[in-house]
Image 1 (cartoon, rainbow, N blue to C red):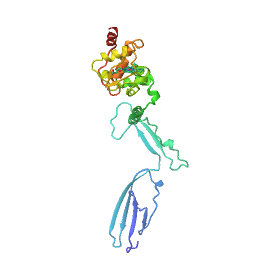
Image 2: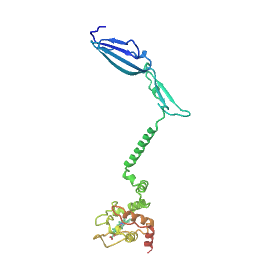
Image 3: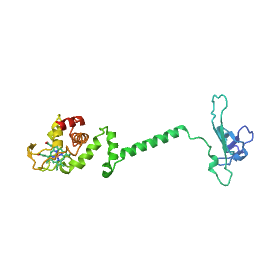
Image 4: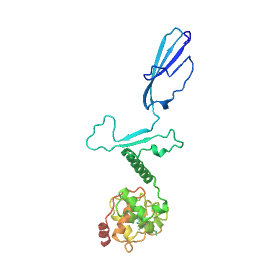
Length: 264
Ligand code: HEC
């Protein structure tokens, strides 16, 4: 050994003989296939030209054999009775084709994954329902209207009232309750429709109306009588539809009340 030169010696584990010895800088190849799998330690000793000694240690782990996966038993676990333990070992570093399925330890799907899955599905359903916008034609069908009214907490006559209004009243008073200026009076914000006492409202729908002023306007056409066409329940429904639509928020009427006024 030339004492005037820097020198590096590399030792493996407790071996007295260095696995490499040379003047820096330089490299060498550590062949791990000759080592057992498990923890090892490389110790590097370097000398400068005055023979001062520097040491550095590096711990590492060799794994050329198959990896081992264990499910069911953990470090420090306290166990009793029979314990089911699943063990898988997979290698393949030296095989020509790497077969990934053999590296998969067949574990059951963990609970948190199920919970996450259910949360996502529930959210997706909630979102779909929120965004569900019926087409106008479908929104008019009795089925959908009843569902949406049930959701809105409206009375059970509401669908009937809306239906009757559309078929019997909208031709004159219009779907939006605005009527036709000077021809058919609007029912939105109409004083009779919004009166706290619904008696006049019931009377007009049952027996019709002709003449007089509504909000200062005299209508030439006449309000037909419906007593022969509509039952007490139907009058109740259509009147309550008018009293709760287009911004109207008047007290509603019952079929019994309609019957009393009809028989008067
Ligand atoms: C053929 C057209 C026509 C139809 C159909 C019709 N109305 Fe009328 N309605 C009128 C006219 C016109 C008046 C105003 C009459 C007047 O002032 O002489 C009126 C007035 C009313 C009034 C009174 C408003 C007020 O302030 O006095 C109510 C309430 C009313 N209609 C409800 C209904 C309901 C409910 C239906 C369906 C069951 C209906 N109308 C169907 C033409 C119609």
